[in-house]
Image 1: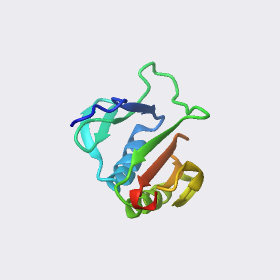
Image 2: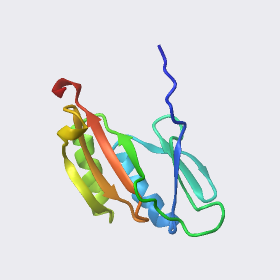
Image 3: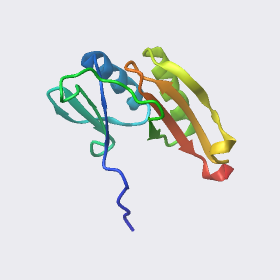
Image 4: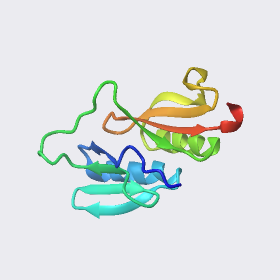
Length: 132
């Protein structure tokens, strides 16, 4: 049975499109995600279709990040989480939580958190069902 996901996509704005594009090309590659669609000032990333968009704000104003908002990406292994984190830090992200288990999220959770170049909080997580 094919279940339609709840979300279609998420978009974040950037104030330095070229640097942010290089950042996301690098870190999302660790999760086997890539550019799947492009428009002037916008890139859609995903495995098969655009689930995450990076873009220059359409209203022409500065991009910002919101307190309490973060975007989580699925990893298929703990190793992918680790690689995502390492690539992100190497590309200029700020650490918000190194890879590891967080039992308060559930026994199966393994993930990490970083802030991208524009201050957006992003996460990569793997759900290890054998640990649940």
